Image (cartoon, rainbow over all chains, first blue to last red; front, side, top):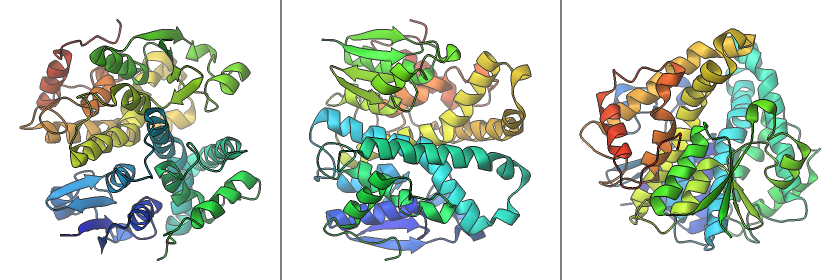
Length: 204
Length: 204
C-alpha cells in the first residue's frame, strides 16, 4: 500500500515531503484538503488524521505521522539525505528545528498572510505582529546567507534534509515580500537545490 | 575532552539536555550565561558559540550544536532513548518538532514572561499575545493528556526523547500559570518520567 500524504499543495511544509519523496524515489498518493475552508479542523479530520488539526500528515497503513520535518525524516531514513556521521546527523536536525522555530513562523506565516489572507484582511493582532515577523524573517535569511558563504550545503559537503526543509519556504520567500537579492549565497544555494537529480518544483 | 553545555540553568531547553546526558551517562561540563544581562548576544558569543544568539548550545571539541532537541538527539544517538523502529523514530521526532512549534512558544514563553520579565513589565505586544499563548498552551496540554490516556509513554512502550523533551517545560508549566490539575494523564506521566533510573531534577 503506498504512503498517503494528507496535504494542501501550496504549503511549503507539504512540498518538502513531496520533494523528499521524489529525491528518495518513494511513491506517495496525495490527498488534498482546503485549509481555507477549514477542512483540517473537521471532527473527522481531528479524530482520524491529526488531533492537532494541521497538515501535512504522512500516512503509512493505519499509522499517521504529523509534522513535516518528521515525515521527511521517515522518508529519508537510511538514504544519503541523512548524514551517516553522528554530529552531522544532529547538525542536520539542528537546522530542521531552527527552520520550524525561527524561519517558518516568520517567512511562511507572512507569505500566507500576504498571499492567502490578504494584507487588508489581517486582524489587529496580526497587523501588530507583522513588523516583528518581517524583521525576524530577514534575520533568518541573513543567518542562512552567512552560513552558506563559502559552503555549498548546510551540513557537510552533500545535500541533506536540512537543505530540503529550508528550501521549501526560502525559495518562495518573495511571495511574502522577502526580497532575496541581498542574499547572494542563498540564491546560489537555491539554484543548487533545484539542480539536484530528481528535483520537482512546488507546483508539480 | 568532555562535552560542554553552554546554558542558562533554569531554561527547560537547557535542562532537557542535562537530563538526556544524565540518562545516557554522558559527562558534560556546564558553562552558564546570564540571558537577562544579554550574555548570549555579545559579539564574542555570536561569533564563537551561536550566530543565532541563543542557548543552549552543546560543544564537542571545536564544533557547536545549537537547538536543544538536536543536542538531545546527539547525546542519545545509539541509546534506547531513540526507538529502533523507523516509524517510532520518526514519531519521536514528530513530538519533538511539535514541542518546539506548539508547546515551547506558549508554555515556556508564558513561564518566562511571568517568572522572569514579570507581568507588570510586559510590553503592549506581549500583553496582546498573552491570551492567545495561554489558550494555545492549554490546547497543547489537552492534546498531550488525550494522547497519554491509556498509554505510558509518548511513543511505543518505553521512554524516548519525546518524553524527555516534552517533560522539560511541562513539569514546570504551573510557573507560567498553567494548572496541571485538569490533566490527570499528564500528571501521571510526569511522575513516571521522574521515576526513570538516573533522573535528575531541573535544579540539580
